[in-house]
Length: 352
Image 1 (tube, rainbow, N blue to C red):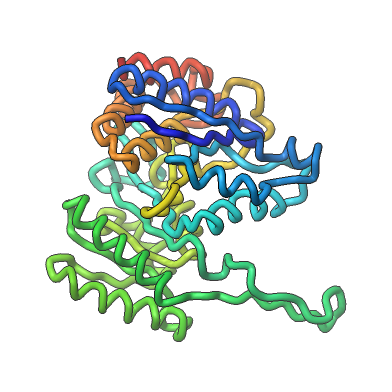
Image 2: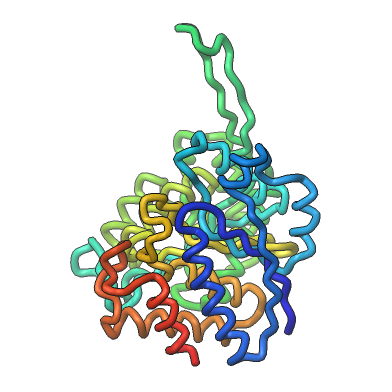
């Protein structure tokens, strides 16, 4: 198969981690006879500071012709917070209708978790987060801004179409995983009685198509509690945009930290984007000491989504082997006992 992949290294450590991700994909290409054509884009802080441009509308049309987007990291202390995040990340998600944010929460053997007495058999679930609606739509405004009478309004927008397609995806994912056969709706229906009533009704109605799947409900505060106390209860969690943003960072911590956490922004009918969930970590940029495993795992998610399941599993197995055999001392930047490029080389060695 031939795939056109848009590559956006981004800011800070982004170019270093993407370099290792591409190194792994090139080895995968040789082993599995998969052809990748990588098209590089310079979207990020440097371009913005030089030209004032973040993501031109013309680029959206180009990206729609690709098979996937591989993203490094976004963020630079020289740029006011929110400018790059909204102008690049959110614009990509919304313009390409990447309505699902997929976050595996999986503890690999040999990785330390802060949860006492919990191991890989306990921490293995997926969060399906709605990705293009909710409070992140940017709807709202100010009244009397800058005065003591200021009013700020941020609207939480939920549509039947948006909610239903995410819940439908979550049910099909439970069937595909074929593990606990359980789907949990994370909401706050006892307080957000309009928006989350829509979520609950849709969850129930779509669930009628899946009588074999166990349905569970958990308020977001209880979800956070159970993720810490009994993570083994979860199989797949489906939730709204804001709650998904929050609980997936908690998930990253219990799976060993940002250094191993990968995510995907999916449009099952269009182009999807794959990235590590950590930031650009500018203080580590250019030092060849950042952990590239999250980016490499994001590459494995990309392979799986493209239908290259065997190649994806091979990459994940190489990551597991690297960690479980003790080649990496710690997942934190500068604590691995290896450089960024050495970790990438080792993954490649275990794939070949």
